[in-house]
Length: 150
Image (cartoon, rainbow, N blue to C red; front, side, top):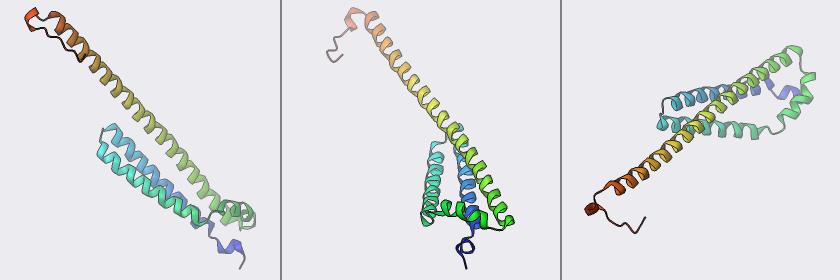
């Protein structure tokens, strides 16, 4: 039995596709939770994604030279098998491109929310300082006091 027959590329690439699809589904859930401001649910989804990425990493470590072997073996595979593998790889790349796009959208959304929150906090702090300044300057002389900590 030669090495090409020993490796079931279609099965291996299909597993990679399944992981990619699962990550994409979690990414869509993540975006929905961000839109709903459900941060406890978001933490749960992020944990699931982290576990899935860990599993994918372990899977990848089991076959570190798979891509090099695939490049060498693919021309020796029967045409039907090669085409089937290439279709799975193409589908995986499509799913991963969607995943990257959605992750980028989620990241931009979270950064925008963080920046808006920061601006709101700064605005509240400035408003509070202005209110204190007016209160102190408009207070009757008998209610004014010296605050040495300011």
